[in-house]
Length: 407
Image (cartoon, rainbow, N blue to C red):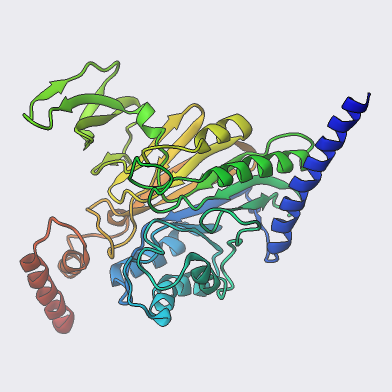
């Protein structure tokens, strides 16, 4: 009997601790809560890898402004590398970098949440915590600073309420996916840390307890893709690093040779069944070389529809993994490397059916006609794209300003 009583008391204690964690987060969310619209929809605009410097690229600014105007999102999520690495050691320089895009959202009065990428605090004078204080100066910012001490900074959740604002219907998770691996000798990028995974499990359980024991559907955002993506890709060939000889491997399904990349002397491909008009694969999936069990925890303890990431500027896809979609979004910016597929992702939730979601990538080319000579020349000299040489850029810049003057 005493043993049973001790177990009950321990469980009560655990519930109390987790509830306190949820309450601490709730107290931090003092602004107008996110909620479904009168039409029952909630639209998220994911913008990734802005990664520009103090002189904001005009095409990036134009694209973001038009995305807000045409898509009318309920929330903007910036999925890391929001500013470029290696900025001068001047606080005002970092503040201006952030202001370049945050003032757009502030003027449009669109709620904004962020996560950090591997470059936000990379050789920059402001720490993640200090940058967070800059974001908090904007009324449109709805991100919540860490409610408890965790690895990195900016791991939190936001509830999405029903259209009346009375009941939480959905959860949005935000993770700092860290910078570079210092946990082991595998090298490469870091990943969501063990204490962040434990925080997620604890918080997920507490939210379910508040919801009568039922899990609340959710979606997650972070910068770096999870390594589980490789379990869903085909390894189609291996290259001998010494001789260069290529060995073709048998795969169980079909794939398109235009959707492949190389990593560690092997070629990987997306299965044909996962390819649609928004899918392209123009660089390596730069995931960590290890995991602390984040994806597994979300599958085992949550009802997470997907994890949306950035980081790999020239990739775009949605790949299912054991009921959890791995959602890759390209860069929307002209201030960071990319190609002709720059774009942003729209994720739409429907309150009447939260077992699924809709998503589309809005490409720059969808909005603008590059047959316009002035726009095309601006596009060439604005783009960080290896397709264009320095000479191409200089010629395009001269043509653009000449057309602008004589227009």
